[in-house]
Image (tube, rainbow, N blue to C red):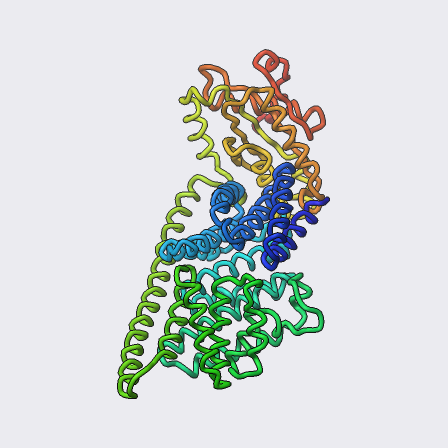
Length: 557
């Protein structure tokens, strides 16, 4: 199984698992966990990150398993930070927002959405080791997950902007699943937005949202089959996917939709709360349009009781309660008018609160951007702008601190030089040379421990500090790095390999001295033909012949 197959299969499981019965979800989750174990065994950071996202998403959509997602989310965030996988890190925050909403913690959900948006606000550079299309697909997924959280919070205007960004990415690089999921989520957002607008008397704007959602539903025909959604052959998507059925019904309520709405809302379907509320409101309006007063009341009262303790959909819940209150109006017409006036005042106040929430979100975004700018300035002083690795200043500071820490002993120090890099710059271009440096930097970070410091020393040289690692163990670890770079596709490495010299720090030795010995060891690896590691102990260091002196011509007389 190739890495691409493993990731592709995980994406299929993510689709199937969200639309299966309990037994199917259990089987799907078990297979996804097995794929995650395989990804960890292979050690590909990008594959591990994508499998973690898949396993988290499956748990969030499976009743009773949300708590199991917590440790996986923590692992995903740590993993994404270490390997600088910014898009996956943003998606992890969005998934944390979904988890917070399940607990009714809107404040935390809003913070998580803001953090995710700030990460994606940066001028992200596509990950060359993923490929442009796969990277764009991950970015679209992260944006969809953020938009979903904002939709649940009722911040529809910003959710609309985020989903528009997702649409741009999906149009270029999305597969059937991403496209279908985006359209369904956008349809769901428009329906919630329309219900919200109705509550403040903006009927025309609400109807426009319902009509747009219905148009999306009708344009979906066939996409669910391509995206592996369970479907009934011969039926249109707008006749069998609950949100799409509800969209058509809310755009034009009437008896023609009643049968389909009842069929998609049976208990066996196990719909999420958001879809159950939307379908119930649509069914109520269709029964009312047909003159079925008792059936209309039953449609709302049942879902109102079933969702009484649910806190995951605050905005839709208010729309449901309002719909029920309006239907339950009794007494003289004057009393009803007073009740409507009071409800209108209440809804206007809630609308003001919504505007305040949007302003709060924007303020938090601004604050997060300022914080990130501050951290970026600090980071620039200690990091190489090309590779993102710590620079010489950070290396010197870390080396000095390790010398003062007894727990860091033994300490191995390696100097890494690129074989054939000059030819890349001379025969191709400096731009391609820069990309090779970035690829090598990522590979060094990916193949070594999180405790090891990988820094750019200058030019095409890197220094690695391996605290608590003996010389022999450091040699074995660095050999894996040499093989990893040698095994990269030529389109990424341009044929460049590594020559590495590694030494063990000695008592009373300073940083300059140990780096000089590592440099001599690196030249031993070069003389042996490169693409290898030379580990040099103190005893064998004297065997390395010094470089010939540089000839300096006499001054002209």
